[in-house]
Every structure is written in structure tokens, then in C-alpha cells.
Picture 1 (cartoon, rainbow, N blue to C red):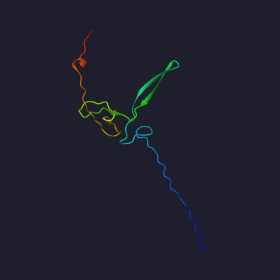
Picture 2: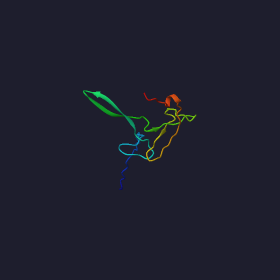
Picture 3: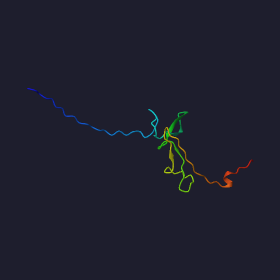
Picture 4: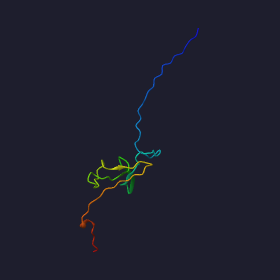
Length: 103
């Protein structure tokens, strides 16, 4: 008499949220570069510093429909690791804004 062994297997797929940035533990081709600004906070006679990370990684200013730098995040160009990035826009200044006088 031959006996058979049957096993029931279940495949579980657990979604994993990938960090959508390059950085630690490694840089991923095309993913936005990590970037931020240094923030300082006084604490007990010393100053603590930390990097406040930009939410969307390193971004270049982008132009609005009229070609002027909009400052809007929707017009910004994300810098992806391993890719060259360019962006251009214009800023209008009056003569008074660009002039300076020696005192």
C-alpha cells in the first residue's frame, strides 16, 4: 500500500512600501535624491543641529506657463539619482531691485 503526503501551502503577499528616495542604505537609479536644510535648536547651553529633509527630495525650480519661476512644487523638477537634470525659468527684477549704492 502506497501512502501519499499532501501539504496545503498558502502564499501570502505582504505589500511593502518602498522608500521613494535614494539614500541610506543605497542609491537607486532614478529615485529622487535625499536633500534638506540644517536646522539648529539651542539646548542646555549648546546648539543641536539636524537635517530637516525635504519631503519630495532635491528639486530644481521650474517655470510656470509664462516661463517665470513659479515657486510652486507642481512646477519643480525632481533630481533623480544617475540622471542629468536641467531646468530654466526667469525672474523679473526692476532696476531699483538690482541697483545698489555705496554709502
